[in-house]
Length: 193
Image (tube, helix red, strand yellow):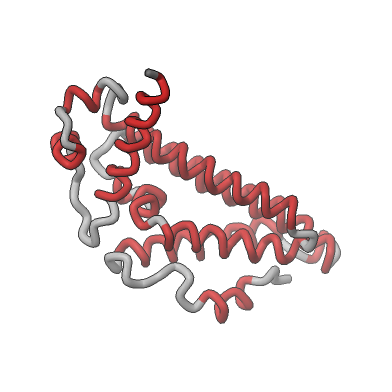
């Protein structure tokens, strides 16, 4: 029974993410979600106490996926400078493959929802920036003296770039891909003195 319950929860989250992939923003209601799933709204509430809890499920999926990939990257890539670059590419690539999740990452899907959801996304952004900062410290140690580089400022500009690309992707109705121009722009994002 719990396996079936877990499968239904995942199905609800998949459909929610798919609905968020619509090129124009639409406020998703539980009635809309239930209709899409072919169940009653009451059936949704057997799996989630609220719509906010459904969005929390998506945020948790995003966190687990991104940090799982980042951790694997940290273990597999010996060069700290390349780790930073690949981390940025990973953040952009995740958004490109998951447009509905990008709407959550930018907070657009959370407008008019419980404010704690936006705070959780803000915390996720802070955690990503902290991870970039840590990776940059290692990269700086490989290439420069630690006093030569403002690691916090570099991590912040990288995070601003990523979030900006996410927003551009969402605002364009998913036409402007996050990885568009990445090959040319990545050179500009290298650690600067």
